[in-house]
Image 1: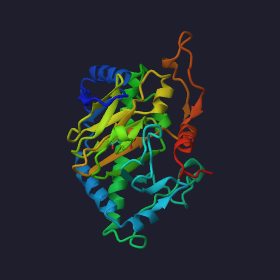
Image 2: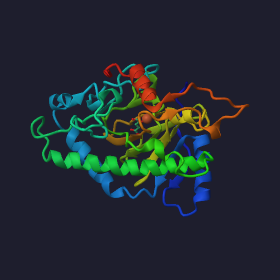
Image 3: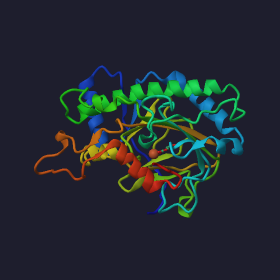
Image 4: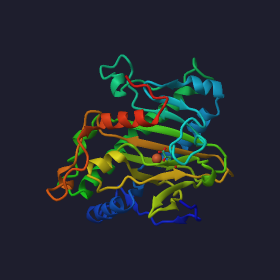
Length: 325
Ligand SMILES: O=C(O)CCC(=O)C(=O)O
Ligand SMILES: [Fe+2]
């Protein structure tokens, strides 16, 4: 594919507190059919955004040696080094020019829900014993608060999506989302100029594996989506999330709602911080064609699976460092 100058597309804004639910749902349905992307406002989380960037920056300023110690491959939590992930193995000739830190729902080993085979376990938290981060509890408290508030916003998005799919009640999918299975991924992009023709990307082209992603970015541009075979800029908008639909939702909806390819290309002028939040159904939730999405003329295109199996399959296909049981 050639690399023409990217254009900007008009991606609609959906507000969680929009009083006109019917028109909001109609607009959402259209975005999900067309782009698989939308901006999200009315979530009430603006106050924590600057704290997230401040804490993320503090963490990434630790020495490389300290960061490398903060990692648990089995649970897929903690630090991921610069260049260690290649989200587009086809076009990339270098690892993505970013480092990351994964934080899930923290379930201590003493908790009866602890089950590493189902990715239910503790986070790798920075502490006074394992690194030199000042006020490590401030980092932990901010991340825990963000995880819980973004999970509540994620559920509200699922409720609007239920209506957008034509389900009779907005709570019809709620029972699949009781475990708060979600991952906060802190990302720090190096001030490196992406060179798509040379296979150098800040984050290579990919679609997200899971159900929905609530993406928080700083004021630096870089995100692009593939629309009609063209890379189109999705500029950052203050206080709004960029939400995108993942492969699991595409599967649940029999291909009706789109999981769109996206990537990040950076100019090299500044570093860039972002925080994708991956919101998933319960590990054992069935992922099979929803009744409103298939019919005799449009039979199920994918065999049934579960949310957990779908995610484990994706991790095993794409992450060399991942070691599940
Ligand atoms: O940093 C961004 O803007 C996007 C990151 C992303 O797409 C991902 O982590 O899945
Ligand atoms: Fe993504």
